[in-house]
Length: 408
Image 1 (cartoon, rainbow, N blue to C red):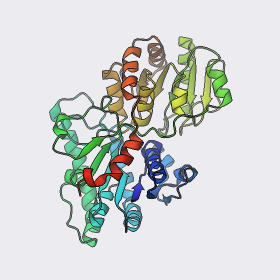
Image 2: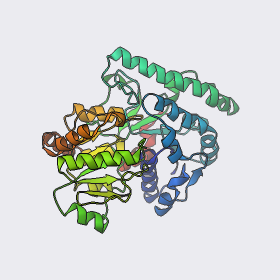
Image 3: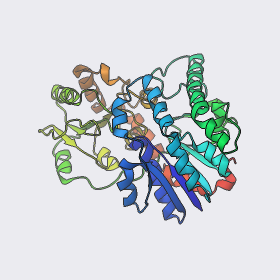
């Protein structure tokens, strides 16, 4: 079976698709994948020679993406600016393909799958199917259903503009009818794979019968492994530290935020591990109570932490939840608002606070809150329910059995 895969965006968007590609290849399938150049080395380390989207500097984009509702426009700009590259790779790569697997970022994919008459599997790391629930990208997660529906309509309108401007021209060139309904374009013939835990992100009642979808669990991939010797030495030298990191997301003033962390840690009298991430938080900072680290195996690292303070990316949220840890989320873009709200509502962490509103006192309170045990029962129970999640293998199973599961 030949499978074509494609993804763009930050690490949370791309790494899971790389893991799926690797698992498909190891199962004996013929695999082609296109990813941003920054992820090329990792893909090659898994024995896959990828094609590369060159028209994307994802680190620069993350710095310029902004926050709040404006980040949605930035995300759509990213997708629309990449459409020509998407078409160029996918049309060529799918000449004799059996299936197309992409993240929701690949707006050209439904057209290519329709043109090639092959199934399209649309992998998402947030509940992006429209319904009565709030769009995960909205900062306002506790509004009436009517407001939520307006939010979905707004997103549909933006998507429709992009489809009319960038997609329909190509559809006509390929001999396909123009797409006029953006919701149907994305979901009508595509099989949505929700690579998330259904307890952490429950389905909306109106989805049943309206969309073709499956929950697969998160695609954890290579998150377990040996930690650096100095990291281990710090972690094991005292009480369990709290991890603080923002992954691929930027912080407006990394030095100022690092100093805020230092002050909060001193105020509480606890220990912390700072994940440098793409923002460079705490780069090179080491003292008796704080240790700054670069890339690490989060599965192993989190198992040694007392709690997690983070940006609210789907991958970090799921990894911390699977480790049975309380979480405090500081959301600023896309689905981070959704995950922050879910962690709070499920009783496994404090109410989320955007980074621009965080203070030393609020951060110190959160540090103390995560360590005092009130969230641990719920966090532990959720972890027990997630322990067998294997999104990578579930996606492989669905894709390779597409004749029974996909809409063509």
